[in-house]
Image 1 (cartoon, rainbow, N blue to C red):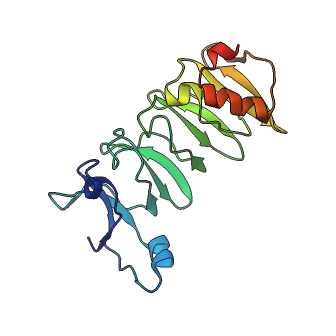
Image 2 (cartoon, one colour):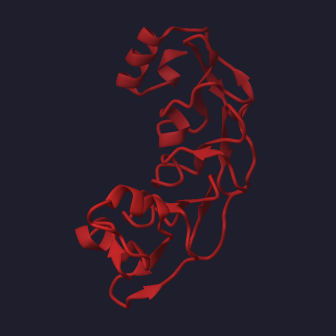
Length: 188
């Protein structure tokens, strides 16, 4: 371990850290960090626990939020545990929900739009949405409701169990009010 991020065990959040064995040039930290390969280590044992990746997000395992972490390799992202790769590779995965221990769900983008997935089954729970709103079932505030959008700043509430839109459409101003309240069921 030559260089590590100041997250996880360093802050008393878990026993893990994200570190690289590559040299990080103090004169060019940003570029050096982008070119380095990163792994998760047990801080006390100084033992590497994962393969090397292009990047590892500190959210999740390293911050003590869940058993999951998001890693990037060859411009693709997947969710892992220390035991295995938990999801397929995506273009982009949002760092909330299953990763942060708030629910069993996560937003992921295969091509250009996001869909909600279940970390336990791999099931795609929504159609592709233009927006991936951090609310509802994703963060544990509902068992079955999330906010979706097909574009043009028009939003709706989607029921992942019934697999359908269950609200009228609303604009961004109403979305902000909904997010402040947090109770999507009450908005129906």
